[in-house]
Image (cartoon, rainbow over all chains, first blue to last red):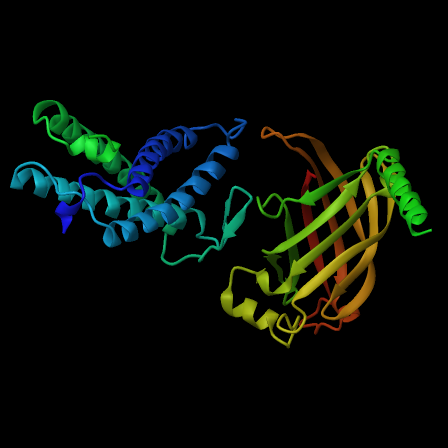
Length: 178
Length: 189
C-alpha cells in the first residue's frame, strides 16, 4: 500500500513545514519570554501569544496524527536500522509534542483560569489536578522542549544525510519535488 | 420622525462622550490586581480573613470631576475562600450567605463624593443574600498612569462595615458585622 505514492501529500507537507517553523519559534520565544523583566513591554504579550500558538498547534498536531493514519505515506528509504531510527524519532516527536501541549496547559490552569487564544476564544482551565502542578509541569515543559529541539536537529541532520550522502529521495518527498 | 430621533440621540451620545474626560476602566480581576476581602470576628478573640476569588466589574473615573465617577461590581459568592474548605462550605450554606440560592452579590454606586486629598465616599446599593441596602465605601485613590504593557491603569482601596442583619445573614458570636477590604485596579478600556 505504502508504495503507491512517491511523495507526502500536500496537506502533510504544509503541516510539516509550518510545524517546523512554529516549533523553532516557540522554543526561542519560550526561552526568551521566561527571562523577561516584569517591566518589559513583552511581559504579558509574549506568553499570551506563546500559549495561543501552542494551543492552536495542539489542534493542528492532533489533526496531523489522524491525517497520517488515514492517508498513504511514501515508502521509506535507507537501511532497516535507519528506518527503525527514523520511525523511533518520528514517534518521539509526536509523543514529545503531546507532552509539551499537556504540560504547557497544566502550567497556566492550576488555579482554574482558562487560556485565552488570541482574544479569539478561551480554553477553560481544569484547575489543580495534582500537588505542585504548575511547578512540576513547568519543569517537564522546559526539558521536553529541549528534548524536542535536540531530536528535531537529529531529524534534520538525517534528512541532509539522505539527501547529500545517500542521494535518495527522502528530503524531496517532504518538499514535494522529484 | 424616527430618523430625527435617531440623529438627535446619536448627537447627544457623541456630545456626552466627547464632553467628559471621564475614562472607563475594567477591574483587573483576570490578572488578579484586585481583591475583595472580608474580616470577621472569631469568638471576639481574633479575626478570620477571607476573600471572594471571583468577581468582575467596571468603573468610571474622571480626576477632574470625581463626583461623576461610578462603579459597578458583581461578586460570585460561591467563590468565598477563607483558606479552610469545611468552613467555606459552612459559610456558603443556607446557615449564612446561601451561595447556592444567592450566587451573585452586586454593588452599584449611586453617588460619589469627593472629600479631597484623594479620599472619596462611594455610596451605592449592595445586594447580598437577596437583600439590597445602601452602603457607603470609604475609599482612597492610590495611583494612576501608564503600565509597562501599553495600557493605562488606576487603582483605589476602600473599606466598609456591613451589619449582617441588614442582609438577613445570621450573626454568630459577639460581633454583628463584617469588615470589607477592597483593592481595585482597573485597566482603561
